[in-house]
Length: 572
Image: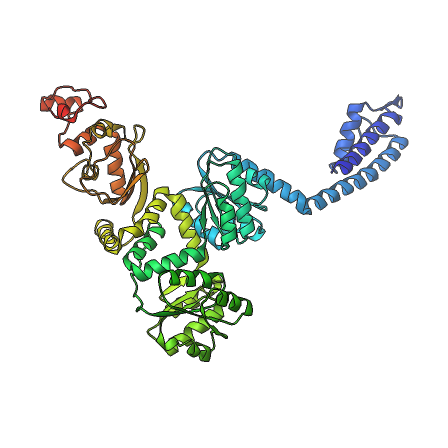
């Protein structure tokens, strides 16, 4: 706009100058000239088409002739300037610059912790909805204008800042608040592994203190990510294989894991049926098929692969897998794979219609087969649901669940990593306990630290080992009543205890992961910060605090014991 504005200013200046030089006459016919102010005032209302008339006297012929020249000159100058402005407003680079400026100001105004979300595809949208339900703020980068526009048209309760940009750019990451002290974590969940790698690398170099969750389906990219810092790398194919083995060998553990990863309010999933021992048929030997076959063979399960692609067939032969060549959707090919003697089938190609056809053909051969499918396109979700599969891989949902578990409550991720080693009977007992305390919808999950800042009222009791898990879960108004909450994990330094017993002794600065109703969380907060509540749940003694209550009860005014004072002395 520099040249159009210069032309407009120049035409205006020459018009004003000309009006001061062209002679006129006053009401008595004497020669007169306009002052600069009068000329500027006249040109201002003339050039803006307001038109108040001639001033201070009627113009002479010379002045009117000059005004005619000025009128047409300013019309041309205004038309040129307005045309240039409209062209600029349609320019993509200009609009991007305005959007970047608006986005940067919006991010700078964030005064609370937020997550930087790179990628707003299906995985990003699932994560946005989950974290929005928790009240967490987010900043989104995506290369698709349609996806960023969807932020304003979606159902998110919070105001989410979004920018159309390549997340690989360090400048875009900085604009999105990577350098902000309020940035609490980074999620790299785009559809491009190289973009996710670039985001992970940039975060590790610029903000090594931030937790990072990155998605990839390539083992080589996963190794490169882990070379920079300690990101949490989620490979949906590998994770599904691990989940499959857990579902086959420990269904209650798999049920508990799926429930906890579903987030607060998730319904308790069905435990599902277990397949019979025996051989499996895997249709498709791409990245997903190879991951599943590797996990099944690690569990000493015999596998037959059906594949039509020559390159994938060569990989199967190199891996020493029993191979049947042909299209798995052809019933004759499935019969050649000896489907009658198999106990389960995995429809794992990269095409939804092919996978649905494979499942339909397999079900005709043997209705008892344990059927696992793979969903590639979200549009086919209703069809996969109608097939009533025993298990279904939706990579976007699996990545979203893993990322949510890691960043929503970091201790939950630690719990999920250690949980399978506890065994299926332990998991079944924990599920029963959670259902008995909180119902079949997953209660709230929260973390608390028994530090002087978060639990000041408990410090004197923690110091001498007087606080047990059972004491912490007593109601501060009626200690014989237990709170509707379960302690899932206690971490003390590097030591972690899952589902500690009621007599487990707590210590200062212990970190706890709890699941329970919101009422229990409020009551527990009272125990942690109110001295009379903490003393009551630990000792059973109520301390008189109000002046009226002390007078009525005859209690003496006693200062709260100091931290480290023996509990026996306090009780005395």
